[in-house]
Image (cartoon, rainbow, N blue to C red; front, side):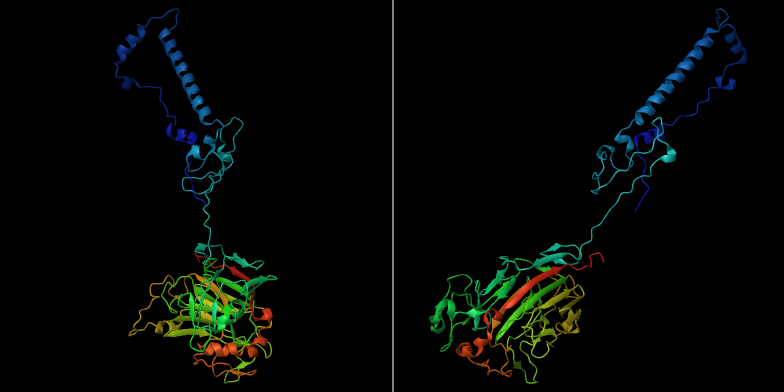
Length: 489
């Protein structure tokens, strides 16, 4: 925006402060306060030589000399203040000595560009009819996206992450140890997580192949060979129930918490689900820091919810195996869980393990939407009515989101990390005892104490479905874009 700037050039200041005053050289008789007769007498008695009034002549010469001196003085001042220097050409509010070159930084910290010198006439004086207008001082405010990446602001619409898996990026954090199952434990091993032909593979493998048959049969096994090989209680010793075995499967679990984390944005993951009975792929967003507490108080977002079995049906005859995915958004507590989800099935004999699909998250300050191949599956605006019911009066837990930065979307108003991996089997109910696996019956019940042993003993049944690298969760690329919405919108 242009504004009028006071003209503080030195020449202009001199003209304002030292303007010429009008002088009246004629004095009246009354102002001299001299009687008329005395005046005549005084003038009559003045000495004269050669008929010349020398007193009058001296007065005239003095006046002429004074006028010439005054004109010379004025001319010197005018010439000085109109000399062709940068000091005389600046027309801004800054200090002349600091504004002597284009592109200087003014006192306000903003970069400013000076105007061209004013037009002058042939004698070097400024021509008022052609004087340049005072320059505009431009203040540009750079806009930032509402998206944050690793705690920093980013530009709207910017591609801020492009993981194409030309090699394995060691910035990924490997979660290690046992979760809630003695079917598998997570390890950092290049047999379970590797890049091949530009594709990231997250693959379950047999523990027996690394540790030998004794690992499967001994009552205890001292791991501790590598920090990545730890069991659920943090000990280096993995225990088994009597008559059972110890963790027959090793599986990968990658987390981006040391690589990247973000809040709001558009995340695209091109992936193919694993082929193989009793394999569960995992692609989710987990809070980088449990800011609002444990359980689900800090929220979770799951892109996929797929079972690797080709022909696995529930009691309604719906294929809940590789032909179905149920992405969801979770919040609340484990005891009072709220899940916003939707189940989507492919055509018969298709399945999410047959080809790559693009799993997308669009996360804004007002809404969360999970998409597959551009089609919105689950999500919508927040807050959800069920969120308020969690913390109604009479509940023993106070609302942890009450003072959130964005209470409308809390707990999804903090930076989250990406988690990817696979798990196998388990007794937590994901592979329900009522499901019908048409190729053969489920080898274990979720109430069995030796469930992991029954699973392993039946490997001749499920092993053929684990087709080499086909049992991997395969990731082609991960791309993250900043939202176009800016902080000032």
